[in-house]
Image (cartoon, rainbow, N blue to C red; front, side, top):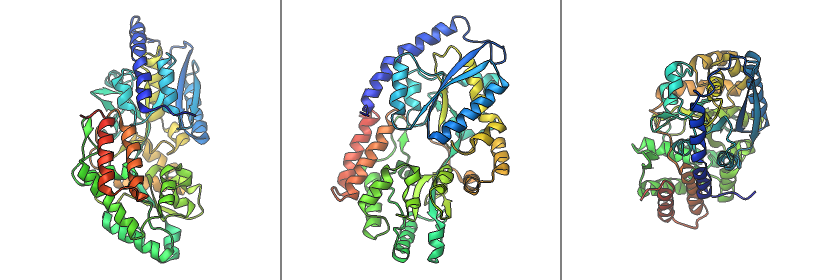
Length: 434
């Protein structure tokens, strides 16, 4: 499939701008669809999300629970793989066929919110129809764009360094620990490489998650408002850190690093046996464990864990022009607050946002990997720093450009300073920074 450029996607969204506004005005003419999910009026809500078949099955079961309790509300369900999802969402929005409810993440939330595609959910929160009172404050705030609540976190996750405990135990090697410094981590990985004959760590220099945490530990951030929060010199230091690690043999060779950069979670190097650690989201532990017989462990990324935060793994948003927005909001409220839904969804979209529901899930689950994910994130909860603002429009390109620049250094085609200059210019352009 031909992939649209980010600029093309923006043009499609721009064309859609008038549609949600007009639809919203029309709906507001009679107060919108205010019969409510309990009125008995038949309502079909369209829902669109991305994910694998297992997520689709779990989501369909959760929506079926809602219909059991509200028989008048049914769902037109559409899902697809992550690849191409936002191209399809932009096309649907531009064509006037936007779903009533759609899944979105922090790559695009600000973009869709600032283009008037998402409904502001603050009035529903104020009226008590949408309850986020049991969310961590930073998690709820991570859905706010320019004062509007543009999306509700479907789950919480944070950065996780997953390691192969079986491999380390076999060679009498210590496990990494939360709070281990970056240089200490690289030294540890070098020792693993020499002893176990398996590269100690995937090289995360192309991974925006790792770069972001590292920046926050330096008193910087990935963004400052709608501009970059770091300098070209920061990028140079980051690339030099990992060039040094590669030179010491702490990481795999470039072709294997590339493989880890572009493969999905089921083929990360920690489960294919090509590295002792992978840099992922902590809630992905269960999915990783399905792909290896080895025992896995997970800790925070290196450095001060306050560089991490309670991140919305993804959101559900309501189309501003939906004729059934009241019902759509009620569905979101159900999905994030009902304990029976949590038993169905587990940690597929991250830990439940509602802390009371999360505790009930932790007591009930019997999947060791899921229990471990919940325990690690709960242990980190009192160490988290404040959540940053939702990334601005252009964030997805900022991530892609980091991958391109980092691989220039990994393959030896450019020195760290050269690649850093290239990346910094591209990242500034992506966010529209002059």
